[in-house]
Length: 286
Ligand code: ZN
Image (tube, rainbow, N blue to C red; front, side):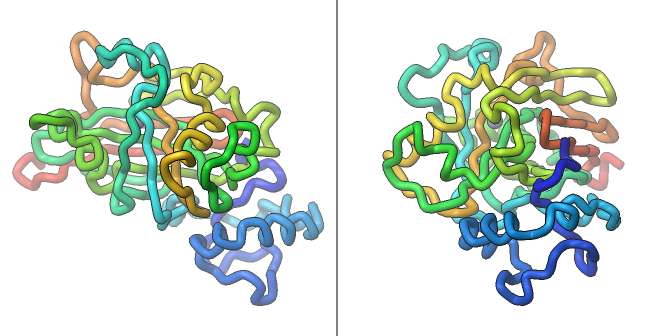
């Protein structure tokens, strides 16, 4: 789980116990991904007892997304058969829909999320992959070696603005403030028995609404990265939301959306949990 040796976590300011690189690496997380190869080598040289030291307190509310300022963010639609069906679409065969979530929507694992006035706010638990080195036109077999690590994410979506208009507005409808919580840790691929088969799910006030396994991804992580890399260059720190399993609110009969004071708890096996509480964003409704 999240406490395992070697999981790279964001240490809060003034933390003690984490090894000091003596100026070799700075404190800014985006720079960590630029030097990912050097960092992982340096970490491997540290005494396992130091890396395993989880005795220092971590205030999770201070944590941000593990890659808080990526150059690019990719999100994938309809990447589980059952979710494509509940969304009223055929499963994609050559390429799933690819869109973005703007970085201004990024947040850490434990947050309050404002509900936009009149919005139909929905949940989508997703495995999130963070790129560890520049990636252009690679084969599937090489793809995992380009991944810095995996984290848990919620692709929170406001369905009215997402689906309004002559063509859907995925990027905007999924990028309200706080709509991309991620964390709590970045877990390197070697930490998993099988990084292609992780259970993930979420609950609303304790009621399970999504539960799936990443082995059911139509386009698994390696295929997504190889496919994207034929169109675009992926940079260190880039973030990929890999798609959500079945059970979202818009696909239910009757439809269900998140209400103020509801609590959304999400989890991925071997990574950890996200905790979101929804709050009103419009004073007149308070
Ligand atoms: Zn999604």
